[in-house]
Structures are given as structure tokens and as C-alpha cells.
Image (cartoon, rainbow, N blue to C red; front, side, top):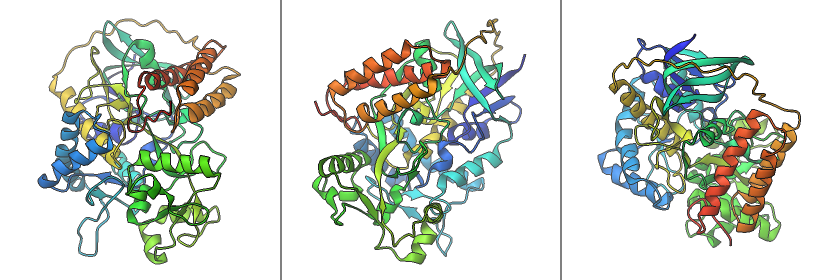
Amino acid sequence: MSKYDVLIIGAGIAGLYAAMKLPASKKVLVVCKDIPWECNTFYAQGGMATALNEADVPVHIEDTMAAGAYHNDREAVEILSTTSLKTTAEMIKAGMEFDKDGEGNILYTKEAAHSVERIVHAGGDATGRYMHYFAMVQNKHQLQRNTLVYDLLIRNGRCYGVKATVNYEPTTIYADDVIIASGGIGSLYAYNTNSRTVSADIHGICVEKGIELADMEFMQFHPTVFVDTPYARKLLLTEALRGEGAHVVGEKGNRFLFEYDERGELASRDIVARGIFDYKRRTGENVYLDFSMFEEKWFHERFPNITHTFEAIGYHFPQDRISVSPAFHYANGGIKCDTNGCIPGMEGLYVIGEAARTGVHGANRLASNSLLEGVVFAQRAVEHLLGKGHQAVQTPTFEKDYGNILHKENDKTYKQKLRQVMWEDIGIIRSTKGLHEAKNLIYDMKNQEIGRLLQLRLNTASAIVEAALARTESLGSHYIEN
């Protein structure tokens, strides 16, 4: 029987940062579904928010609360900002290199709804990639790829490990403590910016086990995404572009976002996404991101990734403008936990990063707070875990139910149908009628001959619909027309 002190599900920034903070004396296993860099952290462009100094902490808190429509848990936001002073300094000391100016000072940028420049970045627009590499190099524990978790081993309010397929072979992995760092729910939506591995399986298991999901109606859509590609994961055009001065325009070059908010392109994400969505629906026009105001050399140095990615498909920036649409980007809600990542009523189970609902983001995440959340709450979960001291855990016997078929033949068709429904009815602008239709459709799919993984997706989709129906007033990223 393979048994670990700690099992970490997910190898994004939250999972790897937790691994970094666990001593080498612990027997730790980090698992990921695919290859480790196929995760949302790797695709994060803009940067990581951090309080600049003690004086900036209350300002960062207020910016976060305002973006979250004051639905946030204030204590969690205070922890996020205050701890960032320590965690950012520790990362830099450990060798994480953020972009600097000629004199060696760290460069800060500004993104929507931040009142000051407080976002650190690396490799221009490749912050997530650099942070992921940094955390991978620091990881002293075993990392196992091709591991798909399809059940949590829970008995009498305690988690003892997971059931998973490892290289397609059913396996049981036992652990004294399990840390969920599995990310959000992106693959549920037809248009999303997420890694293909992010499909809400663990959330679906929680629904099954009676573990509460909270704030699931608050799904964030990124306003500027290039969606004209055949893949589900669309190409993100970072908010930092607008932070540096790029314009969102209609077909005639008109900056229409000022009709929706006086801050125009720099309003919070939910307002910008809704503005673009509404304008396209109302006028039938395409919407573009215009970079023509930027000097070419500067643009290529500041946004090398975007320059290369889009050059490969025939665009020349900053000369060309590019059509954009909103796409699902980030789950503000998730598995309910406290500020140490502990799940209420559950021993030996933690949740951190995007999978968690700490209350930091409220109804809408402030740009670039997500990498920071992963780091801060990973550190707190590990401190709590280590603070418990060693407890001898007697593992009960779990019968091997490997008869659970993960995929069935019609799953693919249903999966595409679900993604379309999520986009159209549980997306940027919702209606009570649309939500009820979606609820019925999901219910119907659940009663078909379907595999285990689709069942889990549908559980999560149900939780999102139920939460959206329960909130009859618009708030933050939950916008309901009637």
C-alpha cells in the first residue's frame, strides 16, 4: 500500500508552493493530470499583485473589496495583502526574478481596478510561466504526472486519500493529509482561457460527498480573448495591455466602453466583459483590441509572448488590431474553506488556490490577485498542517470499486452540449428562464448513460446553476437580466 504524509492534487502555483514549504523529511507526493506545466499558472500572463509596503496594504485591501463588490470576506483579504509583503520578499530571496529596470529596481505595472502600480511581472508577459518554473525547480518532493483523481476516500468526516488512474491504471493513494490544489472549472465553458486539464472533477466529487461549494455563481470572464481558434482554450490578451494603454474599439474605431463606465478600458473585468458582450449583441459588430499607439520595439520587449504567439498565426503587433471576445477565465467561488485552507467538518483535507473559496475574491476577482492567493494560502495551509504535529492515522479498508467507468461512448457529445449551455445560459449575462432551461438540460444529461468524469462535471455545473438561481439580484460577475 502506498501511503504518504501529504498528497497534493495539482501542480500549479498553489500546489507547488505548498510542496516548496513542506520539509524534505515529509513523504510528499504531488500529482497532476497531464504534464506539470499544463496548468493555469503556466498560462498566466499579467503578473502577481503584491502590497508595495505597509502603507499600501489598506489601499490594496480596498481595491480588492471594491472589485469584489464588497462580497469578500474582509479577514481573508487583510491576510492576503498583509502576508504578500512577506511572501513576495521570500520568493525573491529564494531566486524568483521579477522584471527590473536598468538600475535593478523591480518594475511594477497597473491593471484594471487597481489604484496604484503594484503588480510584479516576469519575462514581460510570461509571469505564470516563470513562477511555475521557479516553483518546479524548488520542489524537493516526488511529482507524478498522468494522475487523474476520480474519488476522495472519506469516512466519518476524515479524508484518507484518493482513488485515481495513474497512467490509465486504477490506483489507490493513501495520505494522512490531502491538499486540493486542482484549480477552477474552465473546461465547462465553450470559450475559456484555461488549461485543458481544468475540468471541475474535484468540485464534482465534493458535491457528491456533501462538501460545500460557495459563491459558485461568481464566474469571472476575461474581457479580451482571441476566440477564432478551433481549440477550447482560447488565446488570452492580458489585461496588462489595457493597463499600459491599449484601446478596445468597435469596427469604426470608437472606444465604446466609456458608455458603460467612465473608466473605459480600465473598469473592473466584469464591467468590461459585459460591455463588450452587450455591444457585440446590440450592434452585430466585431470588437477589436487596438495597440497602434505603442512603439514597436517597446511593445515587443514588454509583451514578447503575445508578439510571438500571434506572429505564428499571421498578426503583426502593434500595427494590427485583433478581434476579441470575452471568455470564461476564473472561478471566484469554489470549495468552501477557512483562512488556513481547512474544509469545515473534514479532517485531513485542505483546499488552496483557485479550487478554494477563501472569500478573498468576493463577487469578482481583482486582476492579478490569483497568483498571490495561491502563494499566500498555500503557505498558511502548510503552516497549519505542520502545526498539528504528527498524528498516527489508522487507515480503514476501502473496497476497490474499479468498476467505475470513467468514460462512455456518448460523453463527448454531451460534454460539447454542456459547454455550449454553460456559455449561453450560465455565462456573462443570465436570465431566470435561461438558467431554468440549463438546469433541466443538466438534469436530463445526468440521467443518461454517462461516464464518471462527465457525472462529476455535471455535478459542478448543477452547483453553478443552483447558486445563480438563488441569487436573484445582480452582483459583481453574476449579472441577471430578469
